[in-house]
Image (cartoon, rainbow, N blue to C red; front, side, top):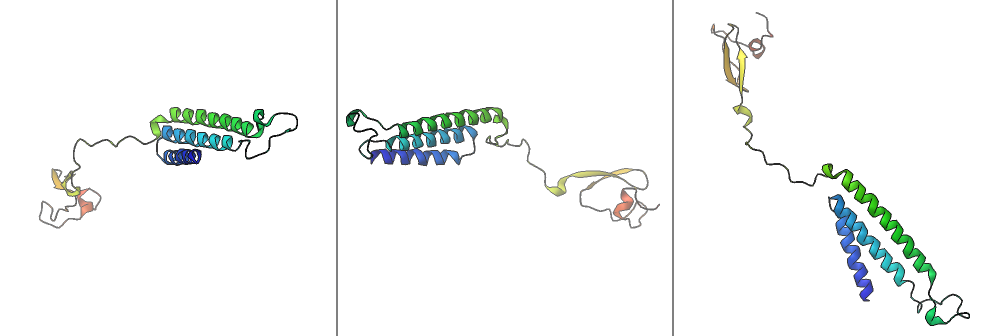
Length: 155
């Protein structure tokens, strides 16, 4: 019962770490899942649950079932290779995992209408107008279009 609870804790911790954003945490999650799998495989090889092979040739107390041990050894090799591969990925992509805090801007952005724009009038002089403002009259007192301010209209 204790072994089953311990395997459950390892699996829960492994799944929690695999669902995190950082590559190193994901790698540690796979390590925990690998350890949980090894404990499950080794606990399956208890001689009291299965009959030992070649019982008539050897004493039952000294016999061990080789199949769960072979499975556990294979799981160890696979978990080790996955760990090395993921640590390599974590080292190669450590700059782009997007886990750093975003930088704090030095200045607050200005509201959209607060920026000034320098425009050239028909008379050749320059004047500052607020963005979004449209001049209502030319220096001659006539009405002007926005395209006239930028020099795109007909003279």
